[in-house]
Length: 117
Image (cartoon, rainbow, N blue to C red; front, side, top):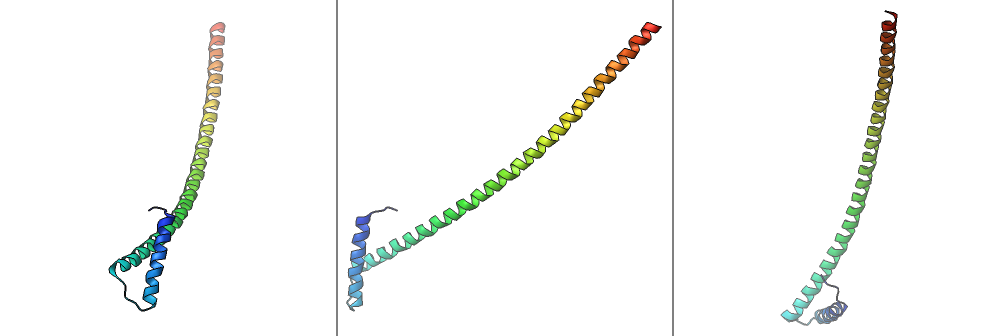
């Protein structure tokens, strides 16, 4: 939640004092129990933070791999589409050449037929 070295140092020293009392068999007050609970919670949160960060790194790596795969697939698909358009363009070019040649030939025959008639 926050990164406060002063608070951590204070909590560590207070928790150490309480643990020394417990180790000597002395009783502890509710306030001292709260210090131990707070220390346990901060330790738990710290471990959760580390676990969450590690999991986020793994998720980021996984997402990067997935995006790279998607990019490769998309590039492959666009290359296939480009090839299809090139084939279609080549067919249209051949048809236009054939159509122009046919038109010129038929036009030439009609002109020749009119001249000879």
